[in-house]
Amino acid sequence: MIARRELTVAGLFAGIAGLERGFHQAGLATVLFCEIDPGACAVLRARYPSVPLEPDVRQLRRLPDVDIVAAGFPCQDLSQAGKTKGIRGKSSGLVSHVFRLVERSSPRWLVLENVPFMLALQGGRAMRYLTQSLQDLGFRWAYRVVETRAFGLPQRRQRVILVASREEDPRTVLFAEDAGAARESRQRPNGDVACGFYWTEGIRGLGWGVDCVPTLKGGSTIGIPSPPAIWFPDGLIGTPEIRDAERLQGFPAGWTAPAQERVGARNARWKLVGNAVSVPVARWLGRRLVRPGEYRSRGASPLRPSGTWPDAAWSDGRAIFVEHASSWPVRRTVTPLREFLRYPLRPLSVRATSGFLDRTSKSTLRFEPGFLDAVRAHCHRVAEASVNS
Image (cartoon, rainbow, N blue to C red):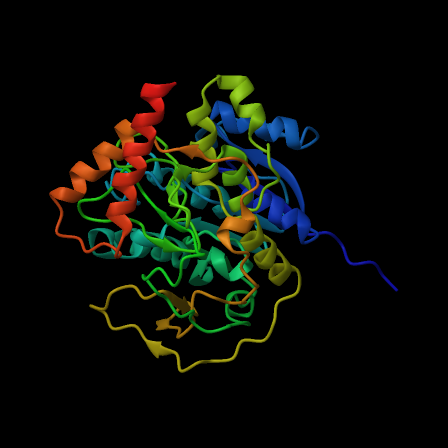
């Protein structure tokens, strides 16, 4: 019996290797990283010392002969927490170098990843640019919004995964499975469930999550990477430790420690974790790239010329079709948040709590019954403890 050859990967905008670590777990082999961030480079060198690391995609002249080019290109200009300058922004616009490089090479697959907000930002201009560029290069493509909770992690996180190929059918990778949309609830079901929220918000949004944390982010409304807060049944309100944040993305605890050793700032690790691809999502994708499934149409319909970009779509190079696929391709059992966390929380400070309460007092948002009372009680307890210490 002839052994199956390992598929090889070139990871552009590799970050801390969320995509590549998941691919490795699926049996793929990374032969090149390209990353410019000093902290991320420190992680890559420590975790993958034998893989060549190029520092700047703008200076990369050509790609090695690989099966898969993966690029979680920068989201700073495309996310709600970022600059929202769009696909032509200084950071997100670097994706043009991916197209420059694949034009000169022949990978079997191209994988792009970014935030769902780009489907709507500036009327979907980013998606028009990406898909038109792929069509111009002779690629068929498919994309799907995928939810991290589907893979068992208690983090409410959605990302657009786009797969393209000149020879293969990307629908057999992205649409071979569908577990159906999860039932969502904004209510706190009972007194045993922890709820996550963003203490940096409070006026226009909250990032509320029942039995999960909201999306870990590389930035925030206050301009720096910051962890979400968690409201526990006993009234404690605190922020998770960075090692639990790494685990919430599917990495081992301590994965980004080399970044702190390199740049010396704790916030650098939060930024790297927030910008990463969830490892179990990448593992699922990698397995499908190795062994594509069977595409079954769920009533795909042509995308209207003036229509907005849906959560899933594909193109055969001639027309674009809306695919009726949920963001849950699979459904793994999600560990309850309070059981998932291993490390002590840091109680939310008086300053952070007071600032959050001040914003909520000016907001028209509706909050869960008892939530703001719990926040006020927490603020009082932390202030009292500070006085008595």
